[in-house]
Length: 420
Image (cartoon, rainbow, N blue to C red; front, side):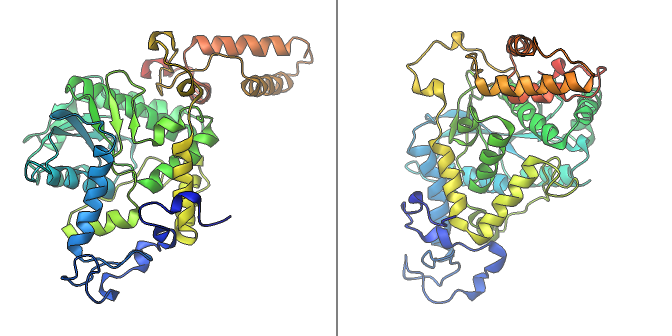
């Protein structure tokens, strides 16, 4: 595969196509004077990008953040913004950049009312014991209103203030037990991760509505979005992947999900943290430490993208930018009334109700396998039964990928519908 794509020659030329991994870089190896300001000593050189001092580098990455918001004009003045924080390097970077932008002079200031939300998923058992404590310690250094909710929450988020970790976790113990049980009943790790990803967005939506914040900042960076793009195609979410990696996702009524760091690389995030001496937390996504990289589609695609980043860096940029060019069929059609659209109850994507030969073939194959497993030989009516099943599935208002999750809940004792 060619390691240089047509989109690798943007504002930075093709320089990022040769970017090595961060651990192979040492800021002490750089020498000389910064070629931008010609005053301060060089602190970093990313690939074949010109050497920069610390001040110029920070100005450059902060400009990327502001440019993503300013060029699209998606954030009105004095908007109420909810920033989702999980302690990962990218979320720490986003929080510090947003806080810095609010302390600038009037001309450069980011005029918005910022709040921070922590969505606790530690009850699933994949985070370190001290994870939540460290997250709250980081947030305590910023003078920003902070709220706390659980991945199993059924009510409004709690203001953090001086509340102890035990009190914050207390209100949702029963709900967390139910959600953990349901997740464990999903047969494969791939579908468990897919469910948690989409359920988390719904919890964020409910919290944003409670806090009257129509704008939400997510901390995804370009390697994350490249992995999401590839995983979504594999999971059968091709029709919604354009929204899942775009700067702006407005599938949910009265709520806009914004990814202002989408153009940042992992190396840029790590250097930003290093130069600002910012604390981070050992953050793990659910399922990341389970088994091997082959345990799920999401783990495999993440490993694949990381390998590309190491050996063919420009390919990651090409994958991510290709995803940006994908457009859903409904976006190509004239504007329609949203009331006429059927939306998936889990992922909030529009369901295409037109008959699909691909989905029919998948359903026909599934039913044929079930017939064979049960020793049934009457295949004459299988086509009609497959069409009837597709209609039943559409009536449930679940897209193809979310139907796969519902079908793979291994216990009838678990009410999947209650989590939609």
